[in-house]
Each structure stands twice: as structure tokens, then as C-alpha cells.
Image 1 (cartoon, rainbow over the protein chains, first blue to last red):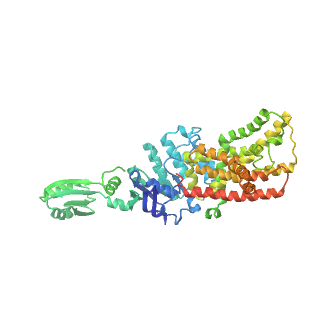
Image 2 (cartoon, chains in turn orange, yellow; image 1 turned 90 degrees about the vertical axis):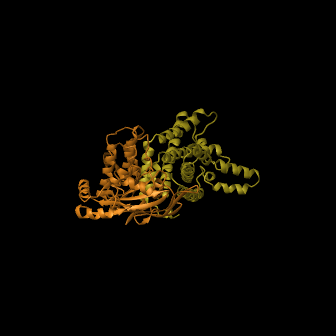
Image 3 (cartoon, one colour; image 1 turned 180 degrees about the vertical axis):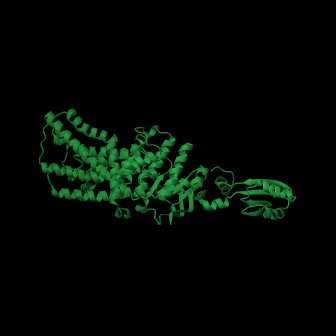
Length: 302
Length: 264
């Protein structure tokens, strides 16, 4: 079952569509990396899923039930844009409010655990307004996952965090997903980080879903290959197939692509010994960022 | 209406506990309690001439005629309204409302919780006001001719009952002006003082439409005219009826405002 399904979801502001006919499928138990340029409609989509914006059109289902269902809605934890916290209160007081808000009976222990999980347990009486951006962000994340929600919706949660903070949050999210089967919908500009934890991706452009793909299929599409430019590719490839270990091969636009052939020296030697002149030989790797750029149709920023 | 029928008391209780915790752990509530003490102190010490404690409680019927006396207890509604403005306004400016709306898709959770908080505030403010008024009056030797204890108790109960729809109206006002503290305070004062129905009633009476003006006695502030210090069970039932009808209407308005508008 999908944790989130949107059908034909649209949102317009003063007649201009921020999200248009968006179909999204976030499988239960997945970490869904939501990718798009600035203004592509990521935050708007997430806000509609959380009930913070009213869709102009379309429908949203959470765990197979309408998003308007209060029971299913209460299974969600969110961090959208800035953390919703009181700046004049301490981290503990803020989490206590959130714990009461979601109906935790004895919140003290839960709050202490959440503070520990995000590394804020030693902030004592320090008020949130005195926190660094990273600390505020961590508090927002703690507020989102307090009370063990089944679904976490995080909009740019690692913004402002230092590398150590990013690593901690990544580990926390991964643990929540693995140990408690929490479904996580996460948007981020840091595609390298997303690629470390996401099991599924959704790529949005101009308010429309361009592609949804699992990490497994993405790695298949992005797999590494050795690229060889020669005068007679068919002849060379047949020779290489006999002598070089590889998963598969193809000829594309006059180039030979050898998948999972890592020994460049052996390839070179094989061609030299068989009298083929090599114009160019290189390794090609396509990571999430390049894949995203390719889908976006140019060298644009994520 | 579907939201109204699917209220989950457990979730309302959770939100109410949160609101209550915030109220008792914030400064605003105690400032308002201080003001509730300050008002009778000011009135008793600064007012010259013949004084009676009952002057500051009101309860003489006739909405337009008793405006001055009635203001004393209505002023406490303003305090509650201001407190609601602070809470609701800050929920939106800090973004804490995102946490609330996510956990409480049914908007009546929000309205009922805030309504209960307002009721508790009204009870506390009224108690503080009356205790200060009677205690200081006794110390200063101001006479307190209570015509009937039962009448006074019923009168206070009726005022409290009418504060429920008034609070719900104020919640709706705050939801309209959630990003503008100033405007919400202006409209809360207009609602709490009953200026609009009072002016309309006076205007209609002057124009000779006295019977039409009577209809305004069934507005929230106009219903104060039914609350008198003379015990009258019929008046109590009328006030209960007015409370129920206006409470439903105002909470329906609040629900519509929350459902029809984007939160962020």
C-alpha cells in the first residue's frame, strides 16, 4: 500500500498554478526523495499533503484513506520550511508542547529521548532564539518525529546543518525507517545526501511530476560504464567481448559502452594487440545530480 | 458539519492540555489576571461620589440603558479576547499552527480547545474581579447591597454562559485577522462592548421601530439585557438558548474560516 497517493493534485495562487495535475506514489516504508528546482512546487505539494494548503483540485490519500480523515492525519509528523517553535521558550518546553499537542500521556520521557536523538539534550535553559540555525533545524526534526509518527514529511530538513549534523540526521532518519518502518517524504537540495538514504525518488518540474523511480531502477539507469571511441566500433566490440570481463555492452552514437568493465588497462591492451586505434577511452558515472540535470534538460541548479 | 459530527474527544483533550500548559507557563495570562485585579482597584479608588459594589457588577437589564454598568463585566471579555489574540496570533507567526493542524485535521478540535481555554479564563478573571471588588470594598467600607445571593449567583452564571458564544465569536475574529494583532483587538473590542447592537437598538428606537429593536436583545451582547440580579429562571433558559444557538453559529463560522483558507 502507498503511504501517500495524490491524483491529479493541483494548486493555483491567483490563477497561476504552482502544482498541476500531480500524481505521486510514496510506498509505505520508503524514504522518498522529492527533487525539484526552486519554485518547482515541492513545498506546495508537501503543504497540501499536511493539510496546510487547500488543493485547488485533485485528491490526496494517506495510507489508503482520504487526507481529510483526522485519524490518519494524526499519524503524520512534519517539518515544513522553518520549525514551528516558540523562540522565547527552551527546546524542552517546545517539545513538551508538541508532545501534549499530539496526546502523549507522560511526555517528559518522550521529550528527553527526542532531545537526545537530535543532540539537543544539553541545551538546558537556553532559549530557541539563541540557537544556531542548525540547532533550530534539529529541534524542528525532533518535533516532527516525536510520538513515533508513521509518516514523516520533511521539507529541506538539513538546511543549515554542518556535515556532522547532516550525518546525524541522516542516521536518525535511516534508523527510524529501518527500525520503525516510518515512511519519509523528504525534499532537499543536497542530492548527494538524498541519494544516501532514499529508496524512491520523485522529480518535479514546473509543478508537474516528471518521473518517479525507485533507487534500484535509478542505479540501473545510472550504472557506470566504460566509454570507448574507435573507428570501427562493431568490430572492436566483438573483439572485446571475447577477451574482457563485463556485464553487458552496447554501441550508442558510435561509442562503445562496456558496463561494469573496470580494468581499463586490459581493454587498452586488448585493442592494441588486435591492431585497433583508440581515439578516446574513459569511465562514465551518472550520479543522482547528473540524472536530475538530464531530466531537467540542462545544467540547472537543483 | 461533518467535522462537527466526527469530533474525537481524546484529540480535543490533547490540544486542550497543550493550550492549558501554554497558558499557565506564559506571561500573558498573568498580565491579564493583573489587569482583572487592577480594574476594580481603579474603579473603587478613583471614582468619586456615592458608591455601591453592585454598581460595578451591573445587572439592571435594558441593553442600551445599562451600558455603563454592564461594561464592568464585559471588560473581562475583552481581556479574554486579547489573550486569544495573543495565542492565535503567535501560533500563526511562529508557525506552531503547522504542528497543530497536522495533528488535528478536524478544525473543531482547535475551536473547542480555544473555547474551553477562553471559558476558563473568563471564570478566573470574573472570580478575581469579584473577589477583589468585594474585598477592597469591605476594606474601604463601600456598601454592598446584594439584593439576593441566588440572584447574584444566577447573574454571574448567565454572564459566564454568554461569554461562551462571545469567546467563539472572538476566535472567529482572530482567525480572520490572524496576521494583524491590531485589527483583531479593534474588532474584539467592538464585539465585547456590543457597540454595534447597542447603536442599532438606539437608532431603531429613535426612529420609532422599538419592536424591531427588541430583536437585537437576542444577539450575544444584547442578551445581557436578560441577565439581572433578580432571580428569573425564564431568563436563564432564554440565555441558555441564545448561548447554544450563537455558540453553534460562531463555531461553524470558525470551522468554515479554517477550512476555506490556507493555513500558510
